[in-house]
Length: 232
Image (cartoon, rainbow, N blue to C red):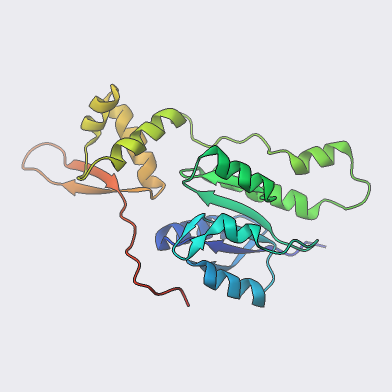
């Protein structure tokens, strides 16, 4: 008998990021995204009226802290697993998430393979028989399987420097100027910028010039202004 797909709720206030995460989950065999919301208020309503095996939750939401919300959820044998997805990378936040029983904690930007590793860990936990559990089975349930957070050629420390540099700029910057600031080549800077662009964490303006190739100016994607409304 083929087990039913895990019913998933994605909680993320950025419309584009929510769509991307939902698509990645939906495209993974064994998962069905049945709710994708942008606020904790709507998530609470959906959780009270539906059944879920997995919650994918951002921390910083317009109406509260996602981790605080998770910590207040009742814990029962049928409680859903939780994967936190956030830009927060401070140790106390990660420690609080672990103490709350969070299944996994993904720091933006992350690759498709890293998300799928977290999803597969959920499936392993959900479909492991409750009786005759071996030590290997326990280890598989409790240990994060090795996974690459970043693709080959992308170093985490350098990526963080690029993100910090972009956050400090008021205007868009070119790969050449980023490379100069980092002490790296334009090609190296371009590779990191394009990775952030593909992860939907930054955006690019293309300026066409009379001669030569177009100039790409990268900048952090602006967050949408809150208008006091919540998702219905």
